[in-house]
Length: 183
Image (cartoon, rainbow, N blue to C red; front, side, top):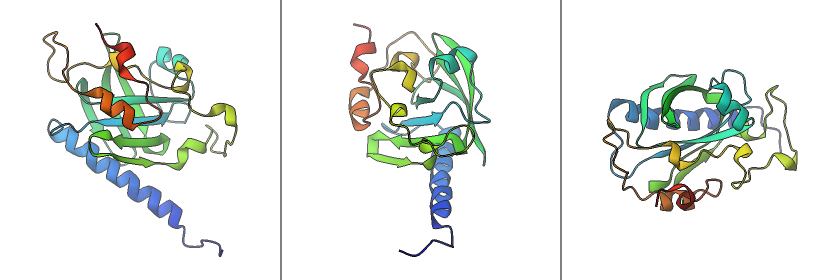
C-alpha cells in the first residue's frame, strides 16, 4: 500500500474532534435532550490536563468521566474541555485538552469515537505495552465510579432514576454501575 502523503489520518482525527466539540457545545447551551449523556475517556498524564492531585494519584494514566446530570460550568473551546464535576460531594474543576481524548461516547444512541491518544505517552511517543491496557476492575486504570455523579440540576437530595446500567453495558471499559448504587 502506498504511503499517505496527504495526512488523511490527521484530517479524520480533527473531524472527529469537531464532532465532540459540537456535541459538547450543545450541552453548554441547554440540558442534554432525552437520554443523551457522554462518556469521555482521556489521558491524565498528558500535558495540559488539569485535575486535582487526589484524582491524578488515583487515575495516573487515564480516566473516564460521565457528563449526564451533575456537571457545571462546561466550557468547550477549540483546544480543550473544561468542566466542574462532583467528586465525593466536592466540586472539582477539570481541564481536558482535545489531544488527550481517548474515547467519546453517547451510549444512548450507540455512538462512539476513539482517538489515537490512547497509544501515546506524555512525551508523545507511541506506547504499545500490554500492561497499560484498560482493566475495568482496577481503579488505577481510570474508571470513575458512577457514585461520583448525581443530578445535574440543583440537588434536592433525590436519587436519579436514569437507566445507567444500559449505558455501562454499551461501553466495555466502563464498570457496571450496580456495584456503586445505594441500596
